[in-house]
Image 1 (cartoon, rainbow, N blue to C red):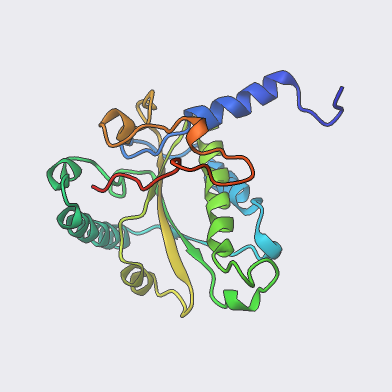
Image 2: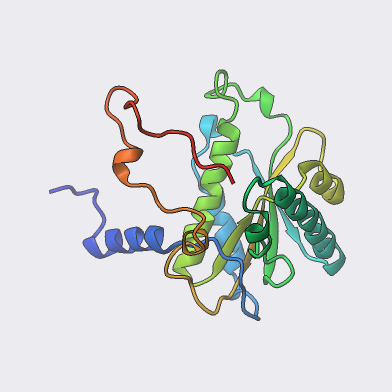
Length: 223
């Protein structure tokens, strides 16, 4: 008997929200429920962070001109990415990669400046600031899904262009554009899987014991 274990129904709910989380690009009309945005950001802010540095910063996009300028930065990168794909440019261009214009809320997530001052846990692995912020986004993502709200992580953008647009301080770094809002449905499987871009790897291809298993975890397919 483990006195620290949550009730079975709670454990099942956690497993369900992990399993049913989706990266959303299609949004329905309407606003987020009252108070939910604040709860989502609070969930993100409760994420673990290496050395307790809490490197995440959030910029809420509130005006239409700024949202449109952000979308244009994303669209430029969409076209550049398509031109870079060796075999699937046409298929990529058919994908909807963002919901910036349609989402109820748009947030830009950035790493704070002066992160080099935080040495605890980062001396040999400075990228842990990024890992910590990804944990914050995942917290937000899971709560959004539990609340029946869609969240999409957009990574198609030039970080310098976004920094300039939002007048970020030197040393900060935008890493994500998050689109949030009501949805008509949650896809039964990830969109890129349903579109044939890939499939979830079996666990025996990602789990090894003691040593990296020869022949496993090889180079991914180039697109």
